[in-house]
Length: 343
Image (cartoon, rainbow, N blue to C red; front, side, top):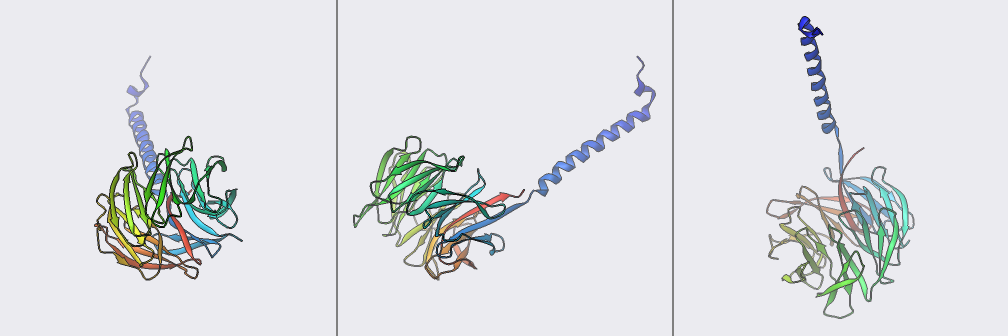
């Protein structure tokens, strides 16, 4: 059989040129697709006395949306990347509202227990643990079905909750009634059985890091750190009014609010020593989140008449400096951060 291309060198050149242009266009098109992907980066605030949720743009520090939820008492709010949904605990309605971040509207509501308070989701996006501090239970919500899959009875008043990134353990702080100490209960998320407990200071809050450290700031004036595998103590340091807590993305620092003394602590996460001089705060600092870049901190200034969220700059050493104040709804309480791709 005769080779057509040997007799037609012009055809060869034309074909190669055509294929080259096709490949170049294809590669360029993929590149344009990746560049064209847009994201939104928001802080979401539960306004306890405002019956609303505020959305704040992280770049501009401006409130972009306010979602009114009639008859509600929004307490804490959690964003789950795996489901791309926002979950809001409503104390007065005994429900968890599921919000679509795309349109900033409530999609559905899940009945939980009486006295909804703190809540946290595992890093796999499977379960949301919700504290009900009036009926002394935990509602475990299956995020794939949006139903309560388990209700755990607690023998004391539950307060805060934190679920590990891998979803294997849950930590629940409980108020014992003892004037000197409270406890942290550890649960298996498979069996829902209590596997251990720790004795800590009064009014404990919780944060668990990827390095398997459990941090427990207590409003009675201490911050504890434990190895979450062995429950051995790593440090116990004095920090007056220790309350809300979050960590830097590199896990070098933990940031803790002094709710009674109007300060923000930056603490070395390995040693428990102060990383920098405490930053003064003009009004009651409560809960904290930090953005993915680790250079901005957002703090709710709680109180029945408060309407502000404070923004702080974080430098490379962990030092905190005031940056901006944002007007939100009345009594900003819990808050969460997300960065998501737009459709």
